[in-house]
Image (cartoon, rainbow, N blue to C red; front, side):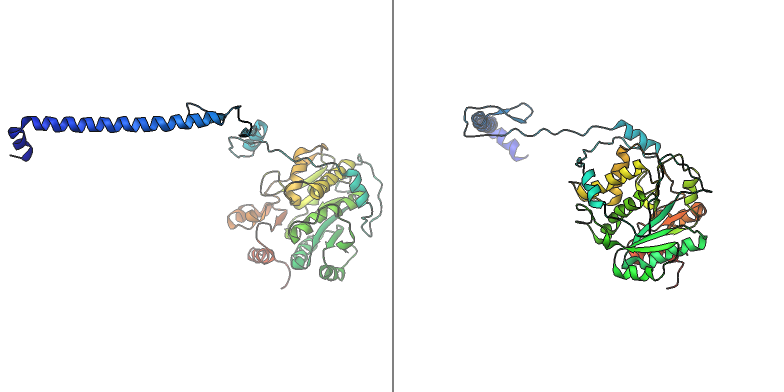
Length: 384
């Protein structure tokens, strides 16, 4: 027989008394806890009233006017969700991207500096180019091409890549005019000694750069951003401009793609890492009034934009997306102008390499990484 049974036999009323005592004790503890909580809630509510605070049933607080002007509790700013751009969603889905929402991001307006830009850039003239008078309506074909210049730029760190790109053009037997902007004395000396009737180099230091066009960004991006000023100078002389990057290799004549449909568009360009994101490995621009105004817009954004300093590609993507000049824009597909991560990938390369016009060595790191990949894929065309 256990202890409890013995206790019940000896003193049957004692067990009942213990139970009652425990029950009363628990009830007292609960009541005490409720009183304490009620008191604290009452104190908090009183303080809230004094500070002009209403305690809602959902536990959130809202400030309201109160009678203590010395105590100010400011209104919390309301969060405004960005609106959903249904047109952008449909465009992304047509490109194969399954997205649920695309938000319109506010864009900081750039104050118009057109008059100031014209004045600041009026003395920028490329030597050897003369003024060509032409109208926007002139028609050209591959058999009768317009006057145009292939424009590129380099510095001493990319001389070997520029030479490799030049060799790829030479092997195609193309006789287009090429203008290379040298960004330092060393690269200018190297290419000046290799000048031909069709290939010229100009030292870039003679050019004026407005605003912060070449400031607050890496040295390489300064080189890239400055090209916009060279483009403008050539276009205003009456020449079309084909802007190219020197970390690329040409396999077919890409100019033919432009001249076969010259009357249909104003600009032609390859795409970058995203659809319709401009890639400067191939960017053809007509020397027409609307294109020249677009380049002014481009320079203006780079030189005077009040937000985060942008690359030339990012700035151009905003300009072309807005397209306030109503340009006819032709984007080439990735099979003809692949980015580096596509062409320099054996799986993609084995399937589509025969369709490529220009392989761009972007997204491969700096000069050493690019050269290494070019050699691996047998597109390094110059001797070490």
